[in-house]
Amino acid sequence: MAPQISTLRQALCTRANASRFLASPSLSRTFSCSAEEDSTPFTVDIAVPFKGHHIEPPPQVAETSPKELMSFFRDMSRMRRMEIAADQLYKSKLIRGFCHLYDGQEAVCIGMEAALTQQDNIITAYRDHCTYLGRGGTLPEVFSELMGRKDGCTLGKGGSMHFYKKENGFYGGHGIVGAQVPLGAGLAFAQKYEKVKAATFALYGDGAANQGQLFESLNIAALWDLPAVYVCENNHYGMGTAEWRAAKSPEYYKRGDYVPGLKVDGMDALAVKQAVKFAKDHAITKGPIMLEMDTYRYHGHSMSDPGSTYRTRDEISGVRQERDPIERIRKLILLKEIATVADLKNIEKEVKKEVEDAVAKAKESPQPDPSALFSNVYVKGYGSRAFGCDRKHSSAVLP
Image (cartoon, rainbow, N blue to C red; front, side, top):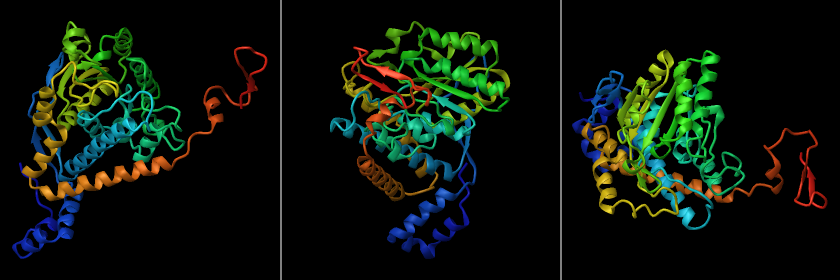
């Protein structure tokens, strides 16, 4: 069903204004702006069917609006450009240590945020840049943290793997494989204990899906009917190991056994939105549920991984051509005549400029003071003393 055209768009698209609209860049921008404000709802069929385990899947239809689709396009384009910039900064040695990029998986983050509020919690692994941005973080904070600068989201001390924004319900960024999952169960327990009508989404990859702590926490979550949603972002490779080589049963949405599960096309932002809304309602009213997001990463596991030794370039380009989450939204916007090709190109130019400006600003941020090494470790004011290995000549009283 096609969206209704707003009064402003109707005025712009009359025959009298048609030639001016096509000729004038300012009018083209107005068209895009009107679409970005148009909340008229319409429905879209979800192409890939949900698969349920011990549960009836949600309807294969998602409700959206021109405003939402335009925000999806802008936000995913921003995330993609941000990760490309991070890649360049790493290769320029401005980012050190570990760095795991999320490009290709943006629909999971965007679709999830569309179905949640900031009362809901998200906790994830080390591929966390876009999740942080989706939870309300800013580009300068992202790049400052990646480069170890003072204005980063964790004051330049966490780096790529340890983004954090507690006030917006984002509890990290964790470097230990699978260790965030039981912490997510704890967050869900707190929500139930405090009678908060919200859920916690614990994200992990297919590489972590065989971790024992995942099943231990799932058992507790099921026993206590915690509002926990276990989200497996299945990008099909745990580092360089294909899922079928690491898991006897790679149908991760069924791995909860007694806990219901749902398999979702993780490259379709609207499918993710529909599934996450469904899972949140289930978790709050009935207890835990598992979601398997069928997604794909374009970069290697980390910056030391070229990403082409265990999969072919044809495989990567095939996913880009057939399943890319940004291109899917682009095609839907054009099909529904919400915006033009030129409008979307303008948005991509704006996003590129945003990212470039954020990188420049982050480069101006100072390095943390050396004394910050001792902060956020012990409770302040206890007079605790730290010693060097000889316990005589090297010591300091912690602030």
